[in-house]
Image 1 (cartoon, rainbow, N blue to C red):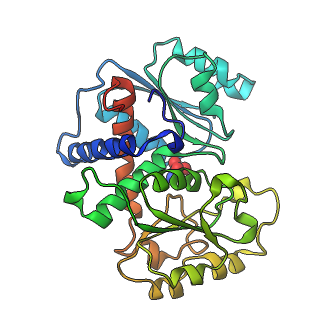
Image 2 (image 1 turned 120 degrees about the vertical axis):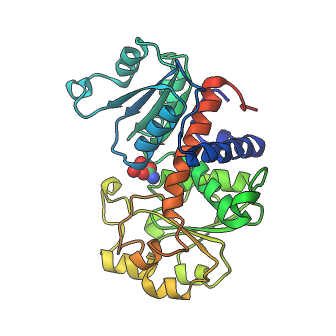
Length: 315
Ligand code: CP
């Protein structure tokens, strides 16, 4: 594995190896000195053409905790505003000597272009491209599920065989849903997609159990409910009548949260629209793994950067 562009490219063994390595990185992140010398002398470029809080900060921390040098490139304030292309931006940054690119872009496929168009010869990590994929998010979600469902001390080598996951909300625009669906299937989980009919993709690629009725799905035993953000910025039409109607039908409201088993883990990739797709009682409850997901993002991204740049653990 030279690049990480899609979770579809990961075998079960590769995914589990990355998750096991992320667990080891998590031990480093618990130390007083949260630093390893492993990528000393290497340079990572964070290429962010789209806004981010969690992914950008955690890739930055991951690179720094592995002792790599880091260039944080943001399209805002750069020569992209003068019309400079992705190719020329990448060539310009690569001229300084780069060992890995991390890229977030609003165009689906931009990381694939960067990896395969001959502009650079170094590993490329997809940090979210359009509505396509967000592979490190899916890995940190799987890491969190292993910890919550198998126990913190009992994750090594484990898959997610038979784990029942409902992914709920704006599936149509969600790169998180797509990456999770591929990875969760590879790890053996049983996934149900829940969305309004207008926000449920109809492509073969999304082949999974699906429902338009959140309450019907919640009536079945579930290990994880993953709520998705309503991505208003990607909506060029009215996909539902109004926010109140969306919340009433597809939101994790207080009423639904009260009925949920106390064993069911609540997840959300963030950023959250509190009161729309998830209520604060659920988001801030002990059942919520949302903060744990963010913390795991650092460990997963350390594992990915280490694996790709060092060339170890790739198989
Ligand atoms: N989950 C996620 O990708 O969040 P950011 O957009 O803040 O990076």
